[in-house]
Every structure is written in C-alpha cells, then in structure tokens.
Length: 296
Image (tube, rainbow, N blue to C red; front, top):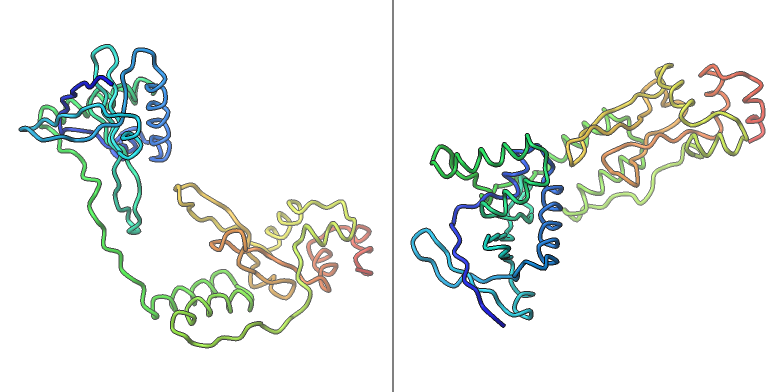
C-alpha cells in the first residue's frame, strides 16, 4: 500500500468551539463531522485513512497513512482530496459534571469543509475565527481542562430532598424513594412500603374506565384553572424547556404526586379512584358526564 506524508499545523479548532461559534448543539456538530468523514471515505478522489503521529518538528506534525487493520486501532483521520489535506482528530474532555465526553479537533481545511455545509452566516463565523487564530488576535479555546466536581454531603442531599418534597408535594411512596437514595449508601434501614391511602390511577385511566368523552388534556386544563394542578417548567439536559404537571396543595385531598417512573426529574399526578367523581364535579364538568363514575 502506498504511503503519503501529511504535514499538519498543530493549530486546530475543536467541535466544541465550532458549536459555540455557530450556536449549534455539540451533538449536532459531532454528527456533521462524522457525516463528513463518511463522505470523504466514499469519495473516488480521496486518499484516506486513520493516521498515527510519527514525530514533532517545530510547530508541525508529520503523519503517514496506515493499513486497513491499523486504521481500526487509531483515532485520527486524514484525507487528501485534490492536493488538499483534511485532518480530524478524536479526543475527549471532561464536562462540568466530571464525565468524559468525545470531541473532534479539525485542521483549518477540515473546518472550512465542514462550514461549507452551513449557511453563509455560520461559515463567516468559522472563517473569521480562523483568521483571528492565525493572526494571534485570539487564543484557542481549551476544552480538556478537568473540572473538580464537589461531592454532595448528607446535609446537601437532605436539603434537596426537603425542597423537592415541599415544592412538588410528593406522595409517601416518592418520599420513601428519596429516603432510600440517601440511606442506602450509609447502610441505614428504611421501610419497604408506605401505608395506602386509596387506589391511585392516572386521569387517563379513570376517564377511560368511566367511558367518558373527556380527554386527559381537557381534564388537566380545567384542573389548572381551578388551582388543583399546576404546570411546572424545567430545563432539559439540552437546555430546552420541558413542562410537567404537579398536584397543588389544594388538590392533595383528591390525589398524590408520584415521581415519574419514566423521568425522575418530574412528577406524575395520580388520582384517588374513590374521589374521582367528586373531583370531576368540583372541576365543573356536567353532572350527566360523571354519573357513571358513581359505580366505578
């Protein structure tokens, strides 16, 4: 197999920096880079392969193309198309939570090639950034700095648990789950169950069992208007707003807030089966619509 040397400036731009410049999510930039790598691999004009650093000389690094078997063991990609050399290096960094994440570092030509798939405004931002880096007007963003994460104390956990219970009006089962999460690492015993206050079901289930033509959405909207439910907003891991429902203090005689089994960061309102017809009439639904609930 022919070998070909690549001379690469140490100056690169990371996928994190590109995400910050363009306002894109880092995961989307990573996806775009992977798609670009696949496209370069398929190009008939492209000589490509994973590359290994051989030695450093001044501010330049020399690379050589390697065999297919060696490619699978290394993390750097190099491509030569029409004399242009594109080098993409896979690396890792620690995020604010102390978790290891993957990023790519791109040389100038690879960065510009990636930017060619973006709109003109985003392309201009990447090109301007490269000019600033090359003229010394800007410094590269350091992405691999380790962040020390403070380990929560028992007191910290208790404060959070108390706040959650008070703010979200959690039921006894959810309170027990929080207690277990704090007590288990310390080897402290906790009860296996809590006393039952009645049969709990979702509004969707109870409305369906009763055969009523009231949607769960209409039920929730009316409950919010009457102050029985409230809509709570939180930020997702991607920074987007997510909404969920929680029973207010006024609504606790008719149901309980349980930690959502599909998302522990949210509550799931559940209603007492025995009091559901009373609740429906409190919410102002027509009596004829709820009469069938008397025999649930």
